[in-house]
Image 1 (tube, rainbow, N blue to C red):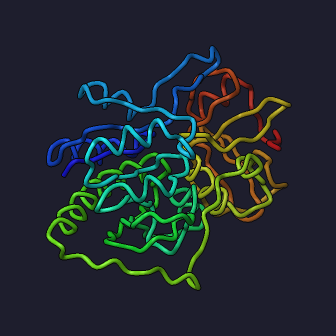
Image 2 (tube, rainbow, N blue to C red):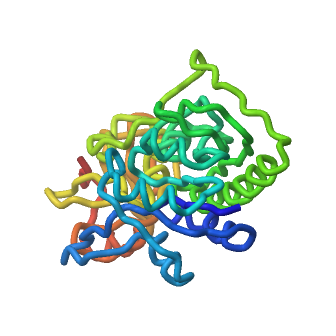
Length: 307
């Protein structure tokens, strides 16, 4: 098939790589380069970097709506299908109508569960033991199109957003290839979603990144895993912001939530119910470090409060 691929972050790369192996990727569409880091260095998306290695034309519109230039360019490519993985911008009706096999989106949940921008993070936050991926025909709604194929992915107890995204990226690549083969053979039936069963995975809000030590240890642990390695759950100690990336929930009698209750080579903090061993963390402006390194470097004592 002649394929246009639309995607931006690293989770989309495995699918693009497999498409190159089995189909003719004639154009890649990704979000514009953006400034990142302290120095605001202009950075290309992982998808653009991969496409340039393959010497594939890359389009980076700020918007596709009413974009006649790109409409003309894509219509001239005789596309069979458009594959979309975590692209990040709205797909307009005119693009949906161009390829005969439609625009196929790979979504990071078992639809209609977790429609929206953050299905992987929400599944971890809510303590799910399994999630999955769905290929669907894009319509003009938010992840509301007819479903094609799906695959389950197990969420392990130590999975964070990074590790689960990597697993799902690989599983999703296989699912997209399977979907395209079935479409080509005419052996697939698109199934409408049951809107009554739909749940939503809203984008992570800044307020959700701050740790509330009044919550249960297990809940904070899920929050930390859902936000690791990026953007990172955070708290404050002595007015200094500290990001926390890896914890272990344990039982224990509590002092005040957020208070350091034990130090014996390990940084242990009380919560609303249970305790957390802080395994890795990063003070603002410093490198990532282990809990014991933080204790030594910042003279943490029993009774020190995180807020």
